[in-house]
Length: 177
Length: 170
Image (cartoon, rainbow over all chains, first blue to last red):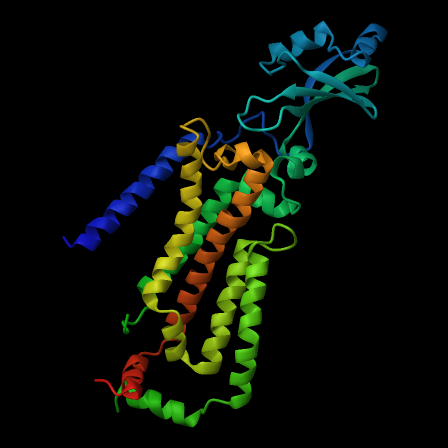
């Protein structure tokens, strides 16, 4: 085997090993905590009694709601913040991700028909509202393309590279290299 | 009649036009400048894919004006093959650097973990690595692949023999 063939084979094996290694980090498909909508109704509701609304206005999530959220296996860690927004309240919670800013808009509690419903914010909201603050780039499309959707773009580039290699294999007539 | 002779006959039949060559000479630098502007397009519209395609279009214009032999001499096959994989290695490489330089603390492609952040902060690190490594890597790959596809489709065979005759070789 020629030296250049062996080194090319080694490169391909290393690249394959790299892709297998990094595939461990990709989030699972169909994860219910990352929906594509703005927010989704989690079907968690309690009656909107006056003391419950008052405690939300003071910045404390009532115990009944905390236990409902915990029962569903959803996070509500210590150190959350409650903010009034329009007809409801935002619950901001500290993020578990490394190297990202501190608080994230997580739940939205809305008063509908004298009952408090819990909604969950999703990725596009964070993309629209926090993009420039998190990535420091004014162009939202490029920032999302290369950062939030980095795996996707890496795959697209690989597809284009594969297309080029296929055209070389199929159509190239041997000329002077 | 050999392939080289045919190509030469073709060459005689369609002479290079002075208007086309002059306009191409004028346009190509500006097209390439614009491609570089689009390529690092995090301030405005654009990105790596678009910039790479515009850059490849400048090679198409060059081949249209000056012929494929001169075009191949400007962008040889060996360079083309090297560039088409180099861009992808830029992209995959900075992703791997994020893991290695943060001592296996961060995920793949988590640009904020590059050690540069202690100086300029996390958002600026992510912005700079997107602008000057990821987008440029994409653009290099796309440019090389599109130029390679165009040259392979336009290559009739025998141009290299004609080229040798012009240089007095063979």
